[in-house]
Structure formats: structure tokens, C-alpha cells
Image 1 (cartoon, rainbow, N blue to C red):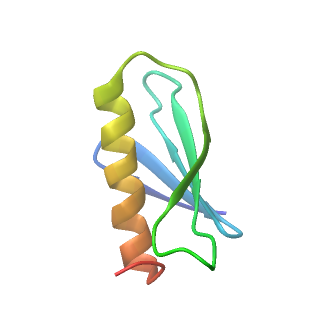
Image 2 (cartoon, rainbow, N blue to C red):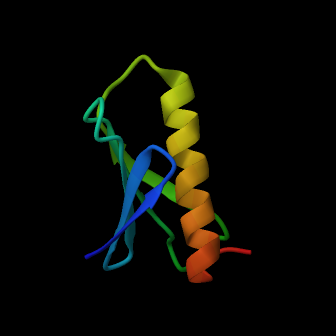
Image 3 (cartoon, rainbow, N blue to C red):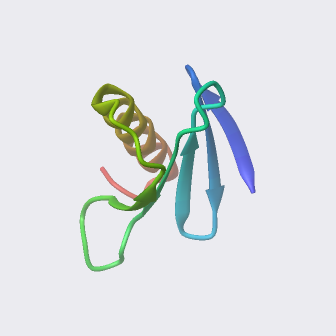
Length: 72
């Protein structure tokens, strides 16, 4: 598993999934990129009412997916 830091998040890549984790809150979100789609799919995440945290984790996952060449 490859792990990198992106601002406040730890981002790991394992298989065909991007795992975004916030070490302070314990929040995590797991994204994948199905071969038949042009975008990332949120597979699951730790429940939270902090929608800003969810949005920031999504942006971090998209940034990583672009870096990996999964999306344009």
C-alpha cells in the first residue's frame, strides 16, 4: 500500500482503490474508479455529519486519481 500525505489527509492506494483518512478524527473514505466510468465512485466511508470533511476528502481522492492517471 502506498501512503502519501495531502494536507490533513493520509492517502493510500491499494489495488484499484484510493483510501483517504483523517488521522485526527478517524474519518475514512474509500473510492474506486470503475473501468466503465469516467469518475470516482465512493464505495464507503465512516459516518459523519461533517459534510465539509467529506467534500475535502473527495477533492483529495480526485487529486490523487488525477496524479495516478485514472481520471483527467
